[in-house]
Length: 291
Image 1 (cartoon, rainbow, N blue to C red):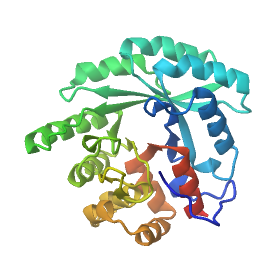
Image 2: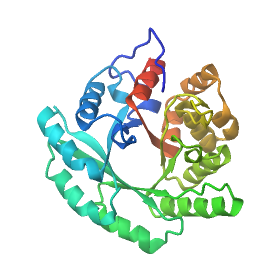
Image 3: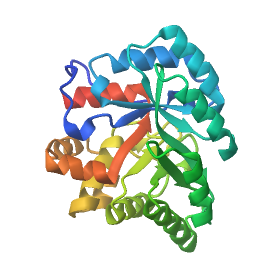
């Protein structure tokens, strides 16, 4: 869990461009036992309208939880529609009905992305099928299955799939953390994933981040940090030691590096790393650092 530095705050509207709408709220995708839909909606709307609202991106929702989300939003009556990242967890065939539901609730929801996992052997036919389900004004996000073996050949096949996703015009996605050690990709895998995004010019998304700076979780597994990914994306685009950025555990060093990324540099970074999925604790902590 991310700790918010004490005594820090950020005024609404003061977020640097590097962090604007960067963190998607993935609370609805947390494992069983997490917050209910009512608590997630209340927290999202409070955060969106609060001091760190400009950091907040989309609300990530699995298709299987869309109906209760719509019900809760109708009860809450938000002043503006909630930007939605729709995650396919019940097959591509469920997407048309889900999108129809979203579009019919235009005062409650604005769809921004449709996100799905993919087999590592995906081909143009599979990608075309995804494109058929996703309207032109909604971004298709595809997460090719990453091998957990670490085998060099398997990793090469996965990276080739990532490149095919980007070259097809979809947004590639990488899960960078989770409760199991196998959920955390190796530093070299993250490095090479960011390199594909930089080379193809297709911004990528990452998910599963639960801390600002690389550190060990309660089980002793090293988890990637949000600031590490941002600095690494900057170096992937402009040159520099990407691996050092990903492995750094020095908060001061990483904060200083992100504060150097202003103006055009911020735009370059976000063209490599569009956004990350995390929790509201990370939004608050990042907002405190951006103050």
